Amino acid sequence: MPRANAAGHDASVPATPSSAHDPWWRHAVVYQIYPRSFCDSDGDGVGDLAGIRSRLDHLTWLGVDAIWLSPFFPSPMADFGYDVSDYCGVDPLFGTLADFDALVADCHERGIKVIVDWVPNHTSDEHPWFVESRSSRESPRREWYVWRDSPADVPGRPPNNWLAQFPDGPAWTWDEATGQWYLHLFTPQQPDLNWDDPEVESAMHDTLRFWLDRGVDGFRMDVVHTIGKDPELPNLPTGRERDAVIANDVAVTHDRLRAIRKVLDEYPGQRTSVGEVYLLSPERIATYYGRGDELHMSFNFSALWSRWSAEAWTRNLDEVATHLDPVGAWPTWALSNHDVPRHRTRYGSEARARAAAMLLLTLRGTPFLYAGEELGLTDAEITAADQVDPGGRDGCRAPVPWDPSTTHGWVRADNWLPWPPDAATLDAASQRRDPASVLHLYRRLLTARRGSPALMQGALGRRLAPDGVLLYERRIVAPVNDRRLVIVNFGDNAAHVATDLEGDEPVRWSVEVSSDGSGEGDVFSGTLEPSQAVLLRPAADTGHSTGHSGPT
Image 1: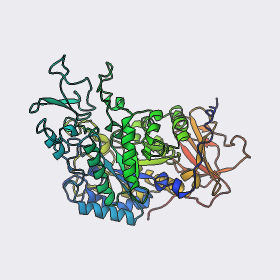
Image 2 (image 1 turned 120 degrees about the horizontal axis):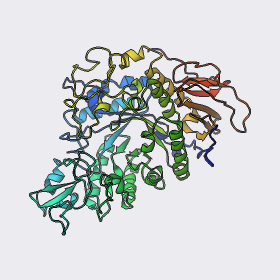
Image 3 (image 1 turned 90 degrees about the vertical axis):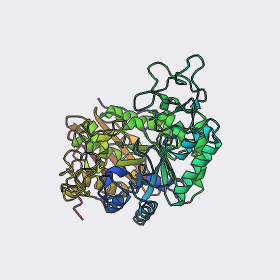
Image 4 (image 1 turned 180 degrees about the vertical axis):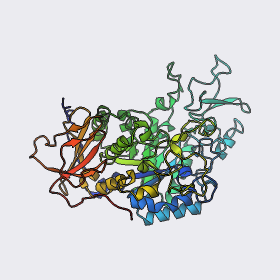
């Protein structure tokens, strides 16, 4: 039976064409680069900033609008850069500040914005701030971190029952020299900053200004919702002790986000922020946009973890329409990143991964691609001997292959992690020569998105569809009239889909992009193969046909 629309979700908040209310980041496709794994330039087996510069032509050809750089700051690498020992520098492993400046200049010359990771919840235990904080209880920076005594009734126990996200163990470490516990929601090498201290807040604002002064266009903000902590630090219910990251969703954080937003607004050029607000609830995430005065964007993690089903993705769209659209919060979508298995690995086939790309790049909101996603990579197989990450996330961080040679475009064949499967056929050079490749599908999708005001700015209306199929329209009426249909068949059987929209005159639709490349430029037959997705445009509207783009 067809699935009816959710009440009130047929048309989302219409986009405003004014540039003041429609900034660059609402149109952008953002490409995440994990620097260690992107490209090595000096032969040490670890990717670096010069390696990123050497591959910018790939990003220009692909058509991305911005890059997000995972941490490249000085770090002991206990958590591979998310344990920062200097917020205002570049780790020698990745290069120098001059290399960073050159990368920003090269990106801006190509029209590519630069977003850097900012880690406000914790530092490295080797950061000078923490070294001073733990030097004595009388240290001027003692209160820059979260220090507590054992409970009076249970000497020798941690202050509460919170567990770290990884590795297994308490979220507290005993400091023998000063006789207190310090809090770390992650590894013991990542002590949590105490944002209740005004000096911490001021110092962290200055770290933002350091990079803003160097021309960065925005920040991805790591677990930013945890910069506020429940002052009581209460025990969590039994069985939920590892939920401290989720439990610390407190009001004071919103004051701090408004102050951070003011720092960004000091600078011209619509500097932006995207938050890692790991709450798994669009309703809660919506509050972190404030009244347009907190985060510009926040990742939708319930969608990131969704299973491959029309029902799950229908729920995702309905939750956005219910909780984000009414408050003007701009959706942010991702299928993969450095913390989760790649979506092709999760979904189990190339066909599904291709259809998912169609979904990601046609939704209303800002899509984030993870480097290698456009190549259809799966996770590397990591043996116990190869594992280096304390959170067990090595598989999705395997090096990106650039050509079919034994070194795959890197300096050497053996690097900090093993190559992903099929690296000699899924590499960028081989796929660029093949118009039917996953890489060319992504390029066609980005071209189609850039050429359609409906996809860039329009409302999203979910439509009737058979079971196992998701159908939605993207539409804008001013300043131009533009519309697109997107159909995704999540099922394992072919599906026939009627494309007459409720209340509309009959429209003949042509296939602008198909996830498997079939039928592009032809009138849509009404039938989708299993795990196929199509982007349709009115058949008489042929001004932006993409077709297969051959190698250039």
